[in-house]
Amino acid sequence: MTSTDNLQKRVLIVDDSKFVRTTFNRILSTSFAVVEASDGDAAWQTLQKDDSIVMVFTDLDMPKLDGFGLLRLIR
Image (cartoon, rainbow, N blue to C red; front, side):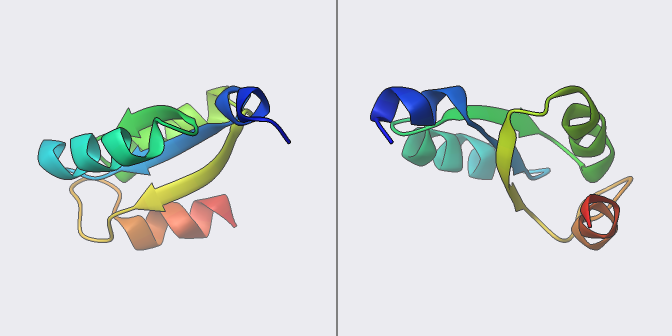
C-alpha cells in the first residue's frame, strides 16, 4: 500500500475538545485524510455518509452521544 492509497482512506477523530482534535489531526494527517467531529452524534452522522472512514479515534466523555454510545452504534 502506498502513501497515496492511505490518503484515500479517512480517519475520524471525535472529541469535544478542539485542542485534542487539532493535535490528533496534525499527527495523523501526514498519513491519512482526517475528518473531525465534536461529539458522538455528529460522528455517527458522518459515518453514515462517508464509507471511506476506516478508523475512529473517540473520546468517551462527550455531550449528546458519548463515546460508549458511539461505539455501540458502530458495532
